[in-house]
Image (spheres, helix red, strand yellow):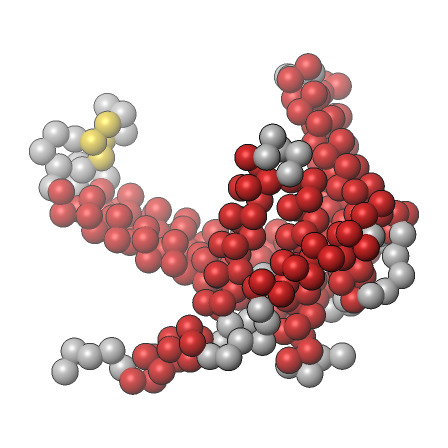
Length: 262
């Protein structure tokens, strides 16, 4: 009695210890080799993205709270969406061994729109658990006086158990947020390959089935790789960012091949 249900335990162990369809090391090495093989194209794309970020920072600092600044920020934000989709598309084609060129950094408008909406939708789905957790926590803490917004600080003598409970709720919410982020992590790449927006969600669900824990480890490895790039006087990001995107595309293609998608 009180034991974890056998089916749930079995599913957890299966995801954690199963023979996975991709290797984290292989994916990162793949990204590195693709970077070296197509260095001029890759660095051209990445430097374009860095230049866009620099321009955005300059506008934010130099034209803050001005009409020109607002207009420039909107233009740069739209350009960021377009070029972001283009960069991912180029790296996807490189991962597939297909021909691509720098001009592909500006994809067709319809593809950019689907990529943007899919990114927005999957991001919103991932944030919903955190939003719900925050609302439940506030509903628990505010009426009991544990938090007093008028004073800007927790009320004196607030029951510790309420904060512990609120913290537990937020921890569970974070777990669900990570789960949905991993579950729908492949949707954007599916859209770049021609899937419709709503079609990309079940496609991603199928691709990530039984490999979510391994994808979490992959995400941790990618974050660690880019932290190293950041520590290398930021210049290292010129290498770690494209390697990361190429590695992610490789993982997507591996999962797609495993599930028999053509």
